[in-house]
Amino acid sequence: MFGARRARLDEITGFGDDEFRIERIRGDTMAGERRRSGGRRGNTRRAARCAIEQMPWNPPVNLDSPTEPLNAEGVLAIHNGAMRVLEEIGIEFLNAESCEILKQAGCRVSDENVRMDRDWVMEMIGNCPSEFTVTPRNPERRITIGGRNMVFVNVSSPPNALCLDKGRRVGNFEDFENFLKLTQYFNCIHLAGGYPVEPVDIHPSIRHLDCVHTKLLTTDKVCHAYSLGRERVEDVMEMVRIAGGLTHQEFEDESRMYTNINSTSPLKHDYPMLDGAMRCARRGQMVVVSPFTLAGAMAPVTMVGAVTQFVAEGLAAIALLQCINPGTPCVIGSFTSNVDMKSGAPAFGTPEYVRATQISGQMARFYGLPLRASNACAANAPDGQAVWESMNSLWSAVQGHVNIVYHAAGWLEGGLIASYEKFVMDCEILQQFERYMDSALVSTTDDDVAVDAIREVGPRGHFFGARHTQDRYETAFYSPFLSDWTNFEAWERNGAVWTAQRANGIWKNILAEFEPPPMDEGIREELGEFVAKRKEQGGAPTDF
Image (cartoon, rainbow, N blue to C red; front, side, top):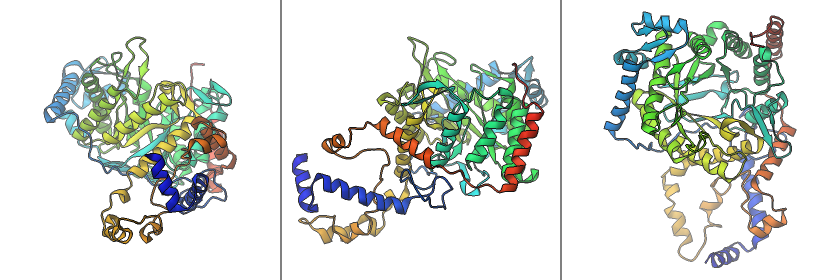
């Protein structure tokens, strides 16, 4: 059947397989020239050379209705369960300052255990904006968090890097910088999150200074600060302020950067993360609160039970931040999955993970909070397992109306590896999701319904030559930069290159042509002087 259809296609077009492939590539290239946005210099600049033809900077808006596994009674059951945890069991706040703040607010504090009245919690949560913007040093890279908006973050915090050439190795500053270049280059990555790989060859006392300095020079996207002690958070906020050319008041008037904190599940928030989150809240900067609730290990084995614990832990910290500074932009982060009950190893992209993310979306909407989730997988290599687990994770993010997708490109081995090839493969997928959410695909104008075109072609013609097609063919369909759509014979003649190998060549080409975004020379000097001064002062204290 397919052979007959292909013969008919050849008859219509007048050329065979190879000619059809060449003509299609030529057409895709022309379309790419019209779609292309300079990933290296921002969305308004054309690149002199381009390793790939990518889609322009355009953070997607989710057009779909959310998937809601629970009925209204189910949502209330989880809500009431979470409120009972907060009222009857309590959350441990391993931070004396936070305990004192909560005690003064009327919470019941015994040592480090804090119990909260549900009415007070809901009052605090009611102060959270359901939608807000974050503006980095380049205002063209401003993002909107909440509502139907969706943004993607690069892989963050793995201790190891992986590529086909060098294999798996401990993270270093060279790999760190390379991943930042990929983060800046790809328009489908909207935030420069935590360290894309941990550069262990930089001493911990000054690592944050070197890393964030390099990040602000290499990228112009929203920047992240680790909540790991007073000095690290305060230094990053000051560096972001300097890089943006802002006064202290301008920095605090709107969110310019963000931090992410994780609870120490079950039922604990630790000292340094609370400290960093409170510092960001006082200055109006976005805080993501992401309990790490692995069902069967740090949370109940039932997914609904794990989500109940996630809600309690997340709301407890967000209530604290709203008590400190009402209106602080906060995001609740779902990192609820399951473990392999045979080994205890974390599992991601599982059916349980998908349901947990969908249910977390229902709960986030119930509280009027933006939601964070992740493109997580447990695979050890950029292979089929990595793809299907990532696709499960990403589809659950779409279905759950997730607003921030962490680790959207490059994550492997349950977060222990940042992979060059997986980064490129993920960006191909992310672009396809951006295209999927393009409102043009569901436009129903007369031209889109195309009755006149159908009339013109009739029952015996074809649409290749129709004016309707000719006017639209260059941008009608998604054009991949990584997928190979040739037939087997053509693919084999071209070297039979598998996907990860193609991705390997692409990231190398990107790094070879990369140019950093511009920065005012005066700002560059001020930023460098601040970093040098803080290094002289010793940076941040460590245990070393």
